[in-house]
Image (tube, rainbow over all chains, first blue to last red; front, side, top):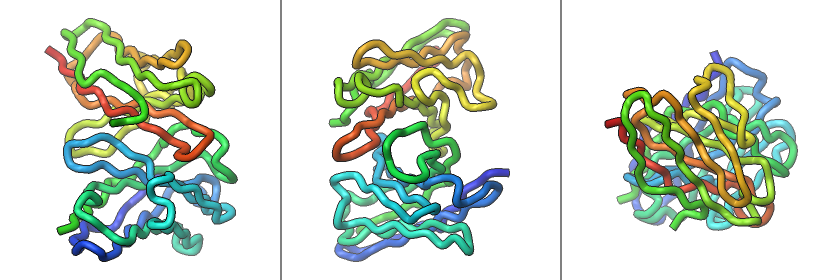
Length: 123
Length: 111
């Protein structure tokens, strides 16, 4: 079945970086983009950005530009999200989600498959 | 403060219908047919219910329906069931700056 499996929980100190992985299976990896969404404790969802395994294009939410990097490894069908300069407000559950947008972010058609989430604690 | 505005909570009795609103601007909801809705149970990942305003992914009950008028999108749940109790989020595309906006979420209580 189609699934995204994320790496385990992380505990980081302020100023550090965190790298979260998201391994896809059950579908053609290069046919869909991957978006990252985070959710702080008791808060709503926030879109962080997107990467295309097809052409490597990325698009980041304005507030994360310069602080986030996304990369893909087509050999292992894995996407990575790295967030630098962590502060306590970055404490959140980070989700990867399959995104039908593949080439450039000219539209949005919903995120149809989600990973289980990775808890990142900054303290 | 979220970019899209949703009511914090709604409630309804089993069998009833409820509607959750999501208000944006003419730069996001009002400009495109790219509105999605998600259901999230506590401790779980969100689940896509509606995409492109009115479309349902395979496997999503037809009790869930979406619509849009001007800068406001709506999710209607008919025939409320106990398992519908969850948080619901809308999202919309925007051309400039941050491309995907989410609402603040609405907690649905089934009485």
